Image (cartoon, rainbow, N blue to C red):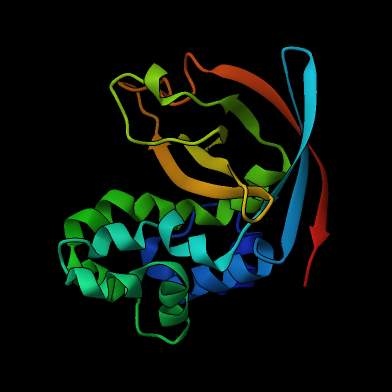
Length: 209
């Protein structure tokens, strides 16, 4: 079983049986949560500076934990699978991958790629490709929405991190993380095709804690 530090040093994606939800939470806590990432974003000869930060509230959403629990637990119990409650329940061992599979195996399999590619997020943040994202340009239609979409290709898959401005926090936050597998019958990433490409340069990574 890999540790959070092991994940950060991997060169090939782990198998789902070699990771735990708590290890992914520790990985997030060690390598994403403590930092503000600053970037220069350039489009149409115009540049701007942005700051991106990861908070504990978004962790469960990025991994689709709540989507697995929906329709499998009472609505009044969904708070246990999202936000700070979800974060703490994973930390305290109340939610793990085995339980999520038992709740809704089909939906877990739909989001499983998030878990095995999650270790690549720090690499993506170092040198992302990016588009100004417009979901109306995606065919077939999608519910995925964000302002900026970071992406990169690893191991015949495209890793995406969608980010949005949070006026309350006064910086950008991760809105969605997802993976599109590429194969012979699907060589184009529909989420970045036809979008406005922008140039993103990482300027700094500032530690907060």
